[in-house]
Length: 70
Figure (cartoon, rainbow, N blue to C red):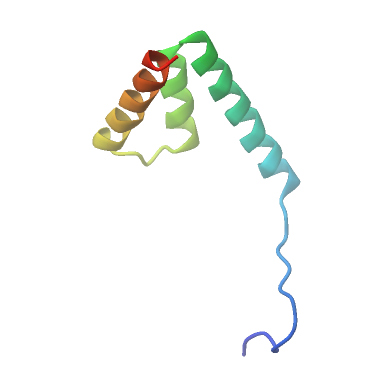
């Protein structure tokens, strides 16, 4: 049994989860601004622990390209 047509689905917003995500993103921005590659990669690992080695290397290369383009 699904939604009735014409009704709007509402989604529960977890404020604590959203706050933690904002804090991680702020820390990542600061690591990028400071050029702290190791700190940035640690934050990425904490945010997404299931990353493969190839995905992590891709993120690392993107970080380096951002620093080069500044």
